Length: 213
Length: 213
Image 1 (cartoon, rainbow over the protein chains, first blue to last red):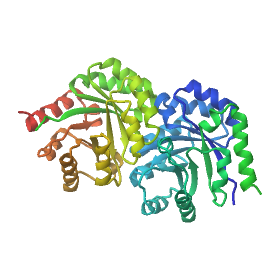
Image 2: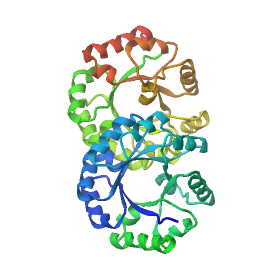
Image 3: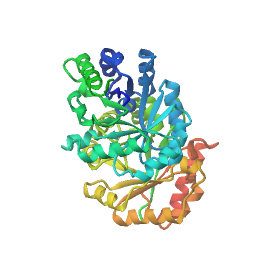
Image 4: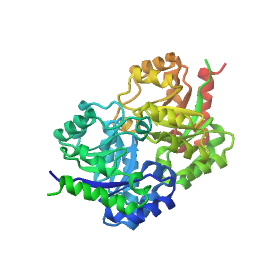
């Protein structure tokens, strides 16, 4: 199995807080996500600053794009993002338009998406998905279940690179140890911890322990 | 029938272009939308500027929120927005969390939503939806059909306030004349026309002709 990457989600509500958090741990992670909350608050400047600070990291703009795929993709690409996200309820033309302007489109799986839809995403060349426990679902007391793990496996078997997110902490990664997860996405579990550097390293240590050769 | 409102979508990629466009026609419309493209580029500053320019208009933040409903809603509300949008694939906890912080949540209908989902939105007190022809679907050659009109009627009959958008021009409004549409949303049909003031007035004249008492 290939070793999963670690992605840091920057979902602060202000650029200054995002920069304060990311400056400590950005170099430890593999992918840096400019989160939706941050984008909606600070706009493209947030992407530009992340790109300036981390020229060699993969940067994802978590636009959760539902429409106007080409314009949104061109804008985030010009600001310095490598990848962007589309919401699963976006139409195929939207995903196709987005994919024409960025290196990778990742589909964010929320609500009632279907395997039939997922096949269509593969057909148009979109082969990354993000499997969520939504922040609000977690607040509502829901958590990772056998059903989630089966669904993730099904997507991997179809040929998707599947990133996983929602309430992840390092000690929970072993839940996924039989799965060839593409990336684990964590945000506040790292940035809000007492020692963010230790928290990020703990993720990397656990990934190495479970998936390293 | 109640006269539909006119909503102007500001979907420019820069604040300066949005301000140039809106300054001419903002007073003619009923609702001003801070579009997703603009929000992703300029952040909350875009909402703050629209609020400053038009203190008496309804301002909608078109966040198409899929997660973190409460944080996003609080942020846009603090910036000056009255309403915000959630994507139809957002979970009910997300919509409920958003609705706790803004006066109205509007659900954006993209992709394969169902009537059963729509009933759940009503159950949690969300009674506004936006029926779309997506920009990318329009670019792909799709247009308003009998099926769209029936779906809109069904939503109105269920008790929703239904706003309609996607490639609308004034002369196309008569397509909807048997329907109690809540608002027509237009963007570039107004701002990109040779004379934006005339284009906006043409919408209001047509709305008055078709739905005025």
